[in-house]
Image (cartoon, rainbow, N blue to C red; front, side, top):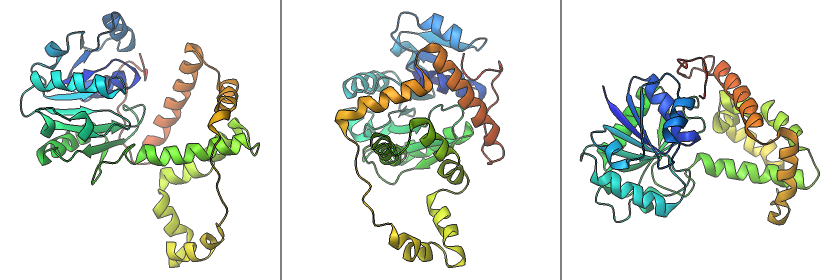
Length: 297
């Protein structure tokens, strides 16, 4: 049985652990937090997952490493130095980082050729995408192995041709979210109403086609060129930018709409996961069924 070491027992790390476990891997989770074993028992009930605070011990003998630790470069440099020292020369060291460049994470690391970004969308066990981002020193074999592993998990791994801060998914998300915040700040629309608008239009459309294919369809038989030359030619308005000084107002509105705390999180996450599972099959995506009937612990 292949062995995966998951570094970090946060939301992303635990979701990776469930996914690898469902795919038949032996799973080790490592994190320095003192309640690690209790957390793993609670969040991964009935699963044969090994939990240890000893990173070196968890990495020794692993066939693949998926790091999901804090998004701080000094922490990742320290973790990847230890991973380089305690794994075989053929083991991929993948980071779940949402924005840190692989070239920066691998800086000064003797295993730079084995370091690659494997960035999931949350939660990894459900969302099909994994962005695979090589750095300038990442070996071609590392990329191919990462793609192979993620495909084996039922994911859609997409390899970026070169690194860029934020990668692709989060760059698109940032632009979209900035405009959403701006519209709420301007009093154009409320938080819940904007979410409903997106779910009933762009979210649904892009889940089926994606923006370029949608543009091709929007232009009819003449394609996207026709759309750009006609409807697109009138899209000359300025979109504006959000005011950072007023971000707190939007955050207050989001908290009022959806709540905070453990109970609110569980309610929202359960609803999200139920809805996501219901559309994965019809859209043609593979999605593992949880052994215990629950998405999280």
